[in-house]
Image (cartoon, rainbow, N blue to C red; front, top):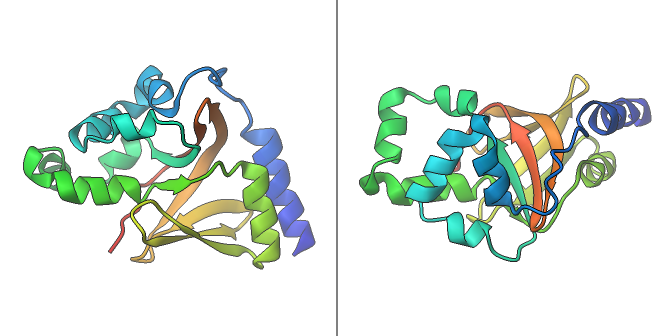
Length: 171
């Protein structure tokens, strides 16, 4: 187990710490400045969450890329981005946010204590599981679907962003 945690820690610290020099920007400003978050930014605006995520925080955001949103059926995604889908969209987006700043090193330490798994409470109130599998770190949603954390520790003035490859869904 210690060898696995060391491998994971090495990957997280060495492979993914190319931080966007963004510590003076808040989480929303970082998202706006990254082309691959354009769908996320649209979703945050639709759900009226921009103001909250520009707040003091700190927050940990598991940010889906445009490709992650592209895995959602286009009709479903279109419905979520309409005013009528705002409540469901808000639930989904707040499922990607944790209160507090959780860096990659914190995740590795928690995984070591939790034998490769740890559960976090999201802002929507539902738990999400973080787990290590095959030397990689994943989120596991309430439906049992996985999302790989592909980049960590994009630090902002009010928290941290970890980039994920699949939108996770609460029940």
